[in-house]
Image (cartoon, rainbow, N blue to C red; front, side, top):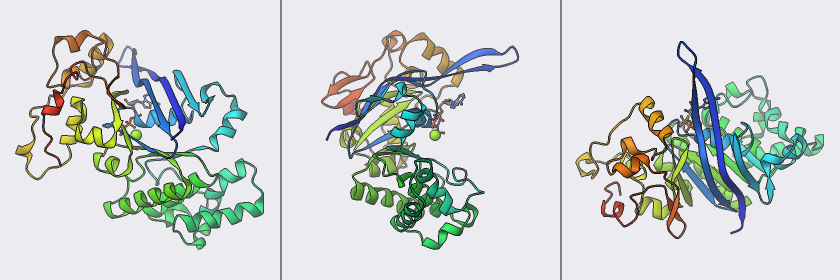
Length: 333
Ligand SMILES: Nc1ncnc2c1ncn2[C@@H]1O[C@H](COP(=O)(O)OP(=O)(O)OP(=O)(O)O)[C@@H](O)[C@H]1O
Ligand SMILES: [Mg+2]
């Protein structure tokens, strides 16, 4: 599989003022993130709320401007492009957002919503209407929906519209940011299956973002685990699920509900306050230090980089040298 996207040392810092005296605070929403995405694969990005998943997704399309780093689509560094060139390359990259209730313009009819990207990119009127019908067929919605407004559709139907719009320009890569989190469970499966089917038909490449290990497992071929803006583990699905290295990955896996909680091997995981976290993060040690059941004094002070411990399996943990985490038998299976 050839490489489609390469992200190198990507950072997005937000600078905000907090408190009465307006003390400055840096939020490292995406902090030195590097990975590649191969053509036709699904890279899952998983992490808890606030770990920077959406910010990362938006940076890839420059919907938010990264602070620094490089993003290559094929050989083109997206961050070096001017507006015109960026528009051209955006044909290839689309995003589907978390909430179909807010991501569709309530004043536009469905037909217009799906047509919009085609119009922006100069597709002729006759071709546009033909394509809109094609796209509705493809996502399993009746053609009569072109005349409806978003509020007349269910959540699942709206997300189908969002998918149709994302597909309009035949993109190469789609970033799906928690595309089913606002939907109920039975509809979630339909949308995920639709995405999978479309991937097969068009050879699409996905970046699938979720906080939910279950759907990540279902959708992804490789997985990146994010924690406070950093990738802490990256590898093939099987390795990440069956032989995780990073204690945070293990914590995530263990948070998947199991029938008998006593079977969980790691107990008493510490929780930390955000203030405390920021202090540690700025000190330059491991970002997971305060919460980690395996941390020692080295973890507090030493810089922790993502290292390839096995072929294609990367981890940012000083203690993950031998097989220590592997001795912990996961009981979520
Ligand atoms: N425009 C902004 N200004 C300041 N801080 C921001 C901004 N956007 C995001 N952040 C902060 O960046 C961090 C990452 O946010 P982000 O939305 O990327 O997380 P997420 O992993 O997508 O979370 P969720 O699972 O809840 O969607 C958070 O601490 C958030 O408060
Ligand atoms: Mg998000």
